Length: 66
Image (cartoon, rainbow, N blue to C red):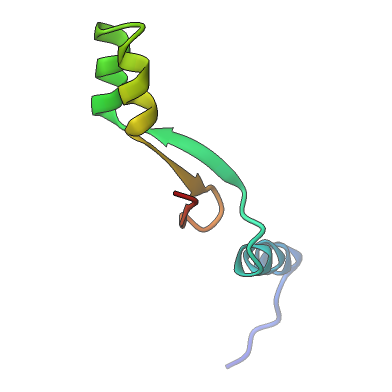
């Protein structure tokens, strides 16, 4: 059965269409090991913090970039 889509669902579908087109809402996530190195071995540990990070889309959760 087809249910009518409400404005909330239409908005969500628009956002997911942006992700499908490659327009992700990117945020950098840091891993726990990198955070530990960054705190304990500051300032040299900041290099490990950066290595233990990844870019993820906040809408669809896909990993973006290198």
